[in-house]
Image (cartoon, rainbow, N blue to C red; front, side):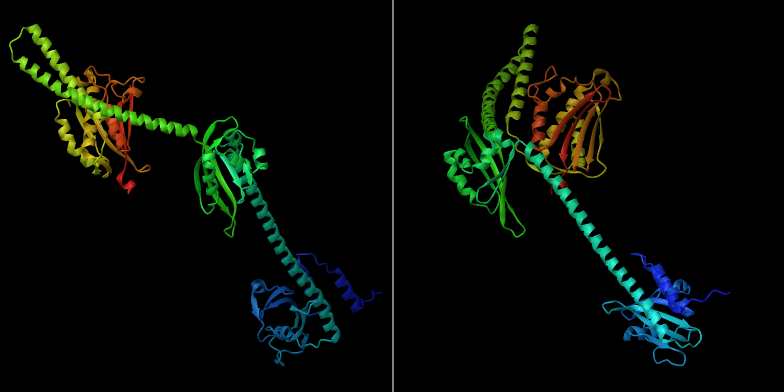
Length: 543
């Protein structure tokens, strides 16, 4: 015996119960719906479509469409367009004979289309079924298609809600993450600020516009000699500790909260000592521009001000010493000149040899004293510059020949200019004096063995450093190295390693270079000899 065939309604219920939609897995579910419609009604082709803005996209198909499945089709003039427009089922027995409702796909004649309608009444798309041959669809078949369309519409609607919820969740997660990161950054910033405020020697403070102190860094207790906690609780303490002569002025300055305030005032500490405070404050505004906090940094500048005053007095004393030295030099030079004239006159007299030797020694010492007085006057005299823009390669080239002709210059000088023109702002005459002095020193520094060597040379180079907008002018000799303990003393006045030196040559050179805001450096060792370097700013970097 053959098994009894199932009732069509029973088959439909079994298929419907077998459909299982899982959240987020829409494609496979709609494919099952399309397959069920085609199998139950024995159709050649069924599709589930999503329709929007007069166009449709196929979500599921019982026929493999290949790349065509991803295309977007126009609803205009199609049978599906009629279903979407009317929102009602459409049955066409033969679309080639009846074209009132639109055209069917090529090769298909019978058509059954039902809308995918949500519980809210919105038409999301269609379930469309096609037959190659003409066919009449019964009311039961239309209801069957509608039943599956209802399931498909619910699935699509749920999927869209799921997608929207996912997007909302993603935005919420991104916002939460952003807030967490901002909170972490704020905490890190607050921690860095706390560590900075609590470890600086200055006092960092914050108060409200009405004068209430809200924060005092720990340095306050060291500077004021008072407890931070006590001051935070009692707002009247501030004015009580300000020196009476400064109190009214400081109270007036607190009323000027529109910009930065830089004040100096005195405080009287509990031990009776008076300290000078520099207090710099500024308003803190909210987004609307309203001042809601006043912040500032206060520091004890008592010692600094005392040091500045002492330095001022020292500078004034040095200026007086310089003027006195210049006066003494002038007073000594005149009688010294008379002495030299007299001694030179005595040289013309026929004297015994012993007397002549003493006379020559006296003349040499008198001449040395005159040179010393000349250099003392030059050192004591203020360095007044007349700067102009000099191209350093050309300037050294101009003075090089005259330097080579000087009797004291016995060594050969190799000049290595910079590869490109380099300009500096300098006093031409004073810079010439510097170079003559340094080249002369380099010649004297060469040992007797080096002088005897025909290869003994002085190298004079110009090296620009574009990273620092500077130029280095170096004078190098290969003579005996300068002892390490002597190097720091070379530029001090009256220090010399020469038997006949005054000890003012390098001191004068340093003063001239300092007046140009330059830098003088000396290095010396056994392997490389001695090198004197002058660092100047390149003129273009100053403009």
